[in-house]
Length: 218
View (tube, one colour):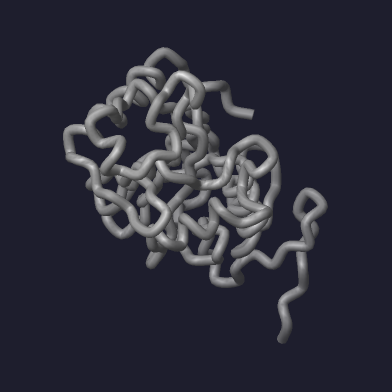
């Protein structure tokens, strides 16, 4: 016998008939990142470091409430992708994919003399203080640095109306498996930067984040 849909706040929903109410979160390629029990919370982080705690509620296996707004799970992933938000469990578990990356670009391209320079010409002058985070995103399973280059170089890239295409002197700060690594972007490759640089860049972001309080749930 086929399952009859239920109207839940205007959504034609098909709740799991077995009573399971786990919420699935995916990336914009529809890879599963993590699952959460009903009424769990996620932490969303904007490019500027502002964080928002949002309680989530199960509608059906493909729809969830984030705060008071209902989303298809892919719709939410695409919204976060476009706007440069990361979303992670408030209480991560070992099996959860919590990998993320952040794109840093030079704040003042006029006053910074290594803007768009290759690493060899810039390596003695690169300073974390010259950069600001302009974009964040969850890092789905199997995503490579070249995938990120393509993503941030295409015509319809996220933030394309306000952010320039990926270029030499940009930095990707990748948090993968609990380890942070900073990469200096070049035309043909990515130059891994010292761990101390990645730590300084991350610490700079944490200091900025500490100046802000959680925004209220919506």
